[in-house]
Length: 504
Ligand SMILES: Nc1ncnc2c1ncn2[C@@H]1O[C@H](COP(=O)(O)OP(=O)(O)OP(=O)(O)O)[C@@H](O)[C@H]1O
Ligand SMILES: [Mg+2]
Image: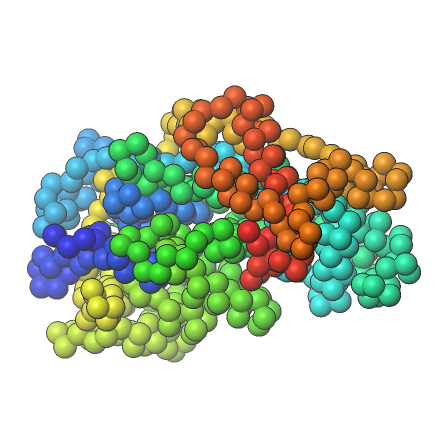
């Protein structure tokens, strides 16, 4: 058997297994199809097989139905006969029900461990996108970040950003020569957008303890990769928050992971559901940066799988980078739809046995056109494929099942309590005016070496590498994470990475 995971059975009689080679899995992929055609189940079967192969996975759960990954499927369940029949038919034998190891995350901390970032982590560019700022307003935000970096001000939560903006606005004339113009109308506009973000519940996302990326890359003692399921049922109601959040995760992963070239198997697989949201209304400069991150993150061993209804929702330059293509059925009633189907069909290497364009509109639920990269990196001929049914439950977990899993997780207690330490808000409102006098800032200063280059990054990497499985009490866990956050705050604005998030 090839060193890969089974997408399903293709070709005549659906007996020809279609593999996704682990050594090619960092060449990204696409799962597309109209609503109800089987995208989520495909994602589930891929995720659990990556996990079984020792590859950690991240995915956002838009409808809640992906949570079933954490439970074994039910041999007495209503879907059993259908799933089992399919499993036998494609040649992988009777279905063996198994749960995947899952870590649940939730920005609001209800259906998973809270996931947070500091304002400083996110950086001005992604924040500007999140706040829908125009160029002038983004300029003001950038100046504020620059000023905070220069003054050693900690930007942790939205309160800090708010105080910083008020402060900067108050001393705008002093700052003008060094930083440029800070129009109070622009500051006002940014503040208003911040209010809107807070109303959407975006406040929850900013703070500490901030997410440690090593916690997304965990494996079980028996070598299975954890599947990180981010509950996105609420998050998706703020599409900008959703897409910016996932973009930030990707950018941070890119910045924090070492170069590995083409590894034997990926370090992480990242499923990006509702991927069109990433690109809709994004300014051209941001789209270019996203394309760049997608291209470069591959050599860090991260494979991104975009999940979307129609491939034409993604930019050509991104589509061209996707090695594995799984195309479920598309509707082809209107001329516009037919055009989309034609484009999707033409993206495949043709198979003389059938016409891909006709097939796309005929595919049944859980059936897809599939092409992957072979061992030499060449796309395989497109095959009509019955997707392998998952071993985990098709359908959501009950709340009680989910709660039990969250409480039993080895990460329990690490993030659950929010910690509000002294940061920009406190420094700026202490009346000192000289923000850099805060204790945190002092600590940061002393760790800078003569060249001004960050000394602490090694310490921070070392601390991040600490075994994530060791169970800690909430206080110990929280203070550990804060120490690490403090250690990485030294980064100057100019060291910021590709998307303006903090460079590590
Ligand atoms: N590979 C499969 N094997 C067996 N049944 C499947 C398979 N894929 C999908 N199904 C059936 O089809 C149903 C719908 O599939 P799914 O939820 O994956 O669609 P979707 O494309 O994600 O839809 P939406 O866009 O609405 O989220 C599943 O609940 C399941 O019953
Ligand atoms: Mg779905």
